[in-house]
Amino acid sequence: MPVDQRDRHVDNLVARVERQRSAEHIDLLDRAQTLSRRFDLPRPTSVQWSARQKLRWGSCTPSEGSIRISDRMASFPAWVIDYVLVHELAHLTEPNHSRRFHELVAAYPKAERAEGFLIAVSLGHAGDLADAPQQCVVDLQ
Image (cartoon, rainbow, N blue to C red):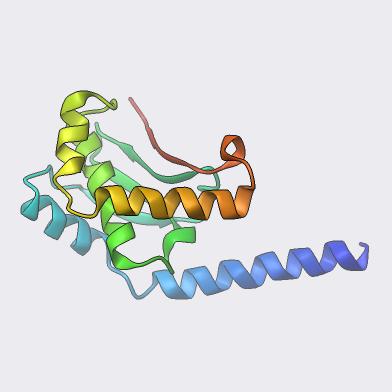
Protein backbone atom coordinates (compact mmCIF):
# COMPACT_ATOMS: atom_id res chain seq x y z
CA MET A 1 0.00 0.00 0.00
CA PRO A 2 1.46 3.38 -0.95
CA VAL A 3 2.39 5.64 1.96
CA ASP A 4 -0.11 8.38 1.06
CA GLN A 5 -2.94 5.85 0.82
CA ARG A 6 -1.91 4.30 4.15
CA ASP A 7 -1.81 7.74 5.79
CA ARG A 8 -5.32 8.57 4.52
CA HIS A 9 -6.57 5.23 5.81
CA VAL A 10 -5.03 5.81 9.24
CA ASP A 11 -6.47 9.35 9.36
CA ASN A 12 -9.93 7.98 8.53
CA LEU A 13 -9.68 5.33 11.25
CA VAL A 14 -8.54 7.88 13.85
CA ALA A 15 -11.42 10.20 12.90
CA ARG A 16 -13.89 7.33 13.24
CA VAL A 17 -12.62 6.40 16.72
CA GLU A 18 -12.82 10.04 17.80
CA ARG A 19 -16.42 10.28 16.54
CA GLN A 20 -17.34 7.13 18.44
CA ARG A 21 -15.87 8.55 21.65
CA SER A 22 -17.79 11.80 21.19
CA ALA A 23 -21.00 9.91 20.47
CA GLU A 24 -20.76 7.87 23.67
CA HIS A 25 -21.42 11.00 25.74
CA ILE A 26 -24.73 11.85 24.06
CA ASP A 27 -27.90 9.88 24.85
CA LEU A 28 -29.79 10.35 21.60
CA LEU A 29 -32.92 8.53 22.76
CA ASP A 30 -33.23 10.75 25.82
CA ARG A 31 -32.71 13.89 23.71
CA ALA A 32 -35.27 12.74 21.15
CA GLN A 33 -37.85 11.94 23.82
CA THR A 34 -37.36 15.38 25.39
CA LEU A 35 -37.76 17.03 21.99
CA SER A 36 -40.83 14.94 21.16
CA ARG A 37 -42.51 16.16 24.36
CA ARG A 38 -41.46 19.79 23.83
CA PHE A 39 -42.64 19.96 20.20
CA ASP A 40 -45.56 17.50 20.44
CA LEU A 41 -43.98 15.00 18.06
CA PRO A 42 -44.15 11.19 18.12
CA ARG A 43 -41.88 9.38 20.54
CA PRO A 44 -39.30 7.20 18.83
CA THR A 45 -38.77 3.57 19.78
CA SER A 46 -35.03 3.80 19.15
CA VAL A 47 -32.46 6.43 18.22
CA GLN A 48 -28.92 5.37 17.41
CA TRP A 49 -25.69 6.74 16.08
CA SER A 50 -24.78 5.26 12.72
CA ALA A 51 -21.27 4.96 11.32
CA ARG A 52 -22.75 3.77 8.02
CA GLN A 53 -24.41 7.06 7.06
CA LYS A 54 -22.03 8.80 4.70
CA LEU A 55 -24.53 10.68 2.54
CA ARG A 56 -27.20 11.62 5.11
CA TRP A 57 -27.29 13.39 8.45
CA GLY A 58 -30.22 11.30 9.59
CA SER A 59 -32.70 8.67 8.52
CA CYS A 60 -35.75 7.00 9.97
CA THR A 61 -38.18 4.13 9.55
CA PRO A 62 -41.62 5.49 10.53
CA SER A 63 -43.26 2.05 10.69
CA GLU A 64 -40.76 1.05 13.39
CA GLY A 65 -40.33 4.45 15.02
CA SER A 66 -36.56 4.14 14.63
CA ILE A 67 -34.13 6.96 13.91
CA ARG A 68 -30.48 6.84 12.91
CA ILE A 69 -28.14 9.82 13.17
CA SER A 70 -24.78 10.00 11.41
CA ASP A 71 -21.93 9.70 13.90
CA ARG A 72 -20.20 12.47 11.94
CA MET A 73 -22.50 14.80 13.89
CA ALA A 74 -21.21 13.72 17.32
CA SER A 75 -18.98 16.79 17.61
CA PHE A 76 -21.59 19.23 16.24
CA PRO A 77 -23.28 21.77 18.52
CA ALA A 78 -26.23 20.35 20.49
CA TRP A 79 -28.71 22.67 18.74
CA VAL A 80 -27.72 21.18 15.35
CA ILE A 81 -28.13 17.60 16.59
CA ASP A 82 -31.47 18.60 18.11
CA TYR A 83 -32.59 20.05 14.78
CA VAL A 84 -31.81 16.80 12.94
CA LEU A 85 -33.64 14.87 15.66
CA VAL A 86 -36.70 17.15 15.29
CA HIS A 87 -36.50 16.68 11.51
CA GLU A 88 -36.52 12.90 11.88
CA LEU A 89 -39.20 12.95 14.60
CA ALA A 90 -41.43 14.93 12.23
CA HIS A 91 -40.92 12.18 9.64
CA LEU A 92 -42.45 9.68 12.07
CA THR A 93 -45.74 11.52 11.43
CA GLU A 94 -45.13 12.93 7.95
CA PRO A 95 -42.96 10.60 5.85
CA ASN A 96 -42.47 13.12 3.05
CA HIS A 97 -41.45 16.78 3.00
CA SER A 98 -45.02 18.08 2.86
CA ARG A 99 -46.18 21.47 4.05
CA ARG A 100 -47.33 19.86 7.32
CA PHE A 101 -43.87 18.32 7.76
CA HIS A 102 -42.20 21.72 7.32
CA GLU A 103 -44.62 23.27 9.83
CA LEU A 104 -43.65 20.64 12.41
CA VAL A 105 -39.92 21.21 11.86
CA ALA A 106 -40.31 25.01 11.84
CA ALA A 107 -41.49 24.84 15.46
CA TYR A 108 -37.83 24.25 16.39
CA PRO A 109 -36.52 27.79 17.00
CA LYS A 110 -33.06 27.23 15.51
CA ALA A 111 -34.21 25.27 12.44
CA GLU A 112 -33.05 27.76 9.83
CA ARG A 113 -29.74 28.36 11.60
CA ALA A 114 -29.09 24.61 11.90
CA GLU A 115 -29.90 24.07 8.22
CA GLY A 116 -27.33 26.74 7.35
CA PHE A 117 -24.75 25.06 9.59
CA LEU A 118 -25.32 21.69 7.90
CA ILE A 119 -25.10 23.20 4.42
CA ALA A 120 -21.84 24.94 5.33
CA VAL A 121 -20.34 21.74 6.75
CA SER A 122 -21.48 19.76 3.71
CA LEU A 123 -19.95 22.24 1.30
CA GLY A 124 -16.74 22.38 3.32
CA HIS A 125 -16.31 18.63 3.05
CA ALA A 126 -17.69 18.05 -0.43
CA GLY A 127 -16.72 21.23 -2.24
CA ASP A 128 -19.85 20.87 -4.38
CA LEU A 129 -23.46 20.87 -3.21
CA ALA A 130 -24.25 17.95 -5.54
CA ASP A 131 -21.79 15.78 -3.58
CA ALA A 132 -22.76 17.12 -0.16
CA PRO A 133 -24.57 15.00 2.43
CA GLN A 134 -28.33 15.42 2.29
CA GLN A 135 -30.70 15.87 5.20
CA CYS A 136 -32.32 12.48 5.61
CA VAL A 137 -33.75 9.29 4.21
CA VAL A 138 -37.13 7.90 5.17
CA ASP A 139 -37.54 4.13 4.88
CA LEU A 140 -41.14 3.50 3.91
CA GLN A 141 -41.26 -0.15 4.92
